[in-house]
Length: 182
Picture 1 (cartoon, rainbow, N blue to C red):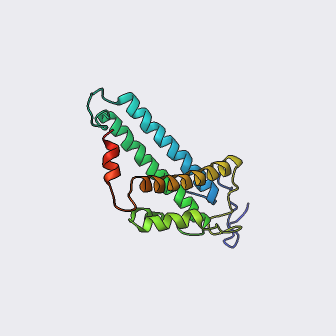
Picture 2: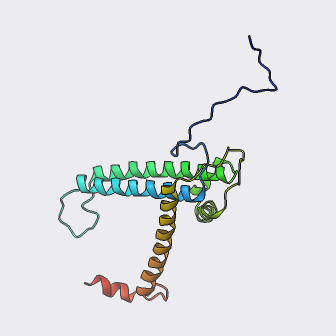
Picture 3: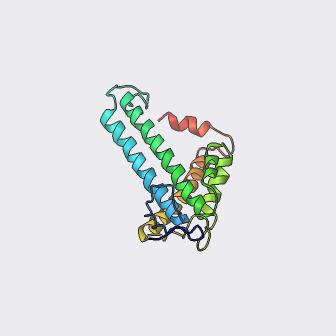
């Protein structure tokens, strides 16, 4: 019969790493890859909800074709997206050897922008930290993470180009009024 020795805690079996769980760590590219995956899933759910449950009202209002069921589906999709955004941010914070509670900074306006930049850019802890060993990136996570970065850069450049084209940088909105006539 063995006796319990408090100086030697029982060996614990390693916990299987599941990417949708808040336990564990995400490196930068894995974080961006999973963020892209959940974003694409939510967009597809929203598009399907509108396509399936949209009204057939004929009107000039672009939002008139969105029915109540579509709005409910999009609301549920947004809640699921927000939940997983928090989960992925917790895992990324664990890679930075920070508490997952810091993920609540996503809820603070303006602070959330700088916080998310920190989470996306800061290098993770090398080797083991308070939250375990680093999780190795899978090949497809690295590819999707790089695609996310490219899409983000293109979105920023596109936004700047659109604002410049519309005269938004100079405050002249006459181009916008002229464009909406056609």
